[in-house]
Length: 481
Image (cartoon, rainbow, N blue to C red):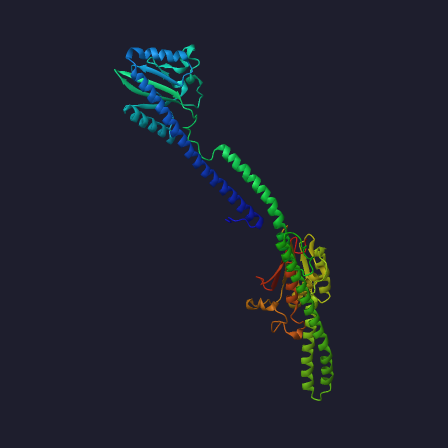
């Protein structure tokens, strides 16, 4: 399974996603660690303040005579709105302890440490209660059941997520001092995951925004590269393709200019080669003609015949060179063409030479260069009927590729010679001798034309004998812009 996208745009977007996501996650993790540190510092400071307040309250009640403790408690309750609820009970009240985690441990440890240092007591119970479960006084009455005159007490203003700190320690004489107060920091015991829903939402918003804006920029940057890639693919099949527009970023415009310059140089080199072949072939005709006239003047018939045969072979090679240049000339416009009518026309021409060609199947129009493809198919059909008398042509079409198969009834080709027959001026002996006509350029020209249409030409020996030529041409083809 491929992990990386196949396109440059996809890889850029993947890099952006990983970069933005990684940066956001690391920043949130660092920020959460800092926030946790700061919260622990605040909790520790708050715990110390509460502990010193509780210690002062305990010292105050310790200093009172036993008979005056309840009087002082009643006066505090009548005042209302006090921060601490204080009572002296004849037993330790049960508390449904809540909360967990490092924040609670920090509060409990700080309270016990300060109370032990300030009061010298170690038997201290530090617990946390939910407001609805908090019990008060020796009767263990619930907070919600306290009389109306308690309506102004701070404990009654507690929210559902605000825990109440309960500290109980012995006063001596079988009495327990009970101190309850609201925790100033609601929700400190909630062990939330560092990547909360709010943070996750913000992360997604940032990610979508950055990726969306980056996608627009990357699309604009890679569009020109895509045009350059398509132009390079077309150039391999058609040197006369339209040059690229030299626009866009400086690097892309420079690459487009270099590509256009390379295309012009290739066109110039091909034209020079064609002119050179044509000039050499044309210039060779004159000395060949003079030599043929001189050969006719020889007295020895055997020598005259040998000279004439050598000159015929040389003349055929010159004609083959001209035919090769002409066959590789693809300077024509591509247009939609139906292959079946083209094959039927070629089969009619081949029938005049005594060959028989049957055609099966049909295909939708294909964007091709008609004259060039007609020359390639003509060469293949002429070979098929020349060496196999008759041939069957089969068309198979699909949305992606068009397949054309030519099967003859000739002797076939040895497996070790399959690639060699595509070389120029190569004809296999003895059945494919030059004395039978031809220059050995037909297959070479045909394959060049098929490859120029981004297709493939493959030769195989049929199971029942004969040679099978398989041509596969893609849709929509290299000439579709």
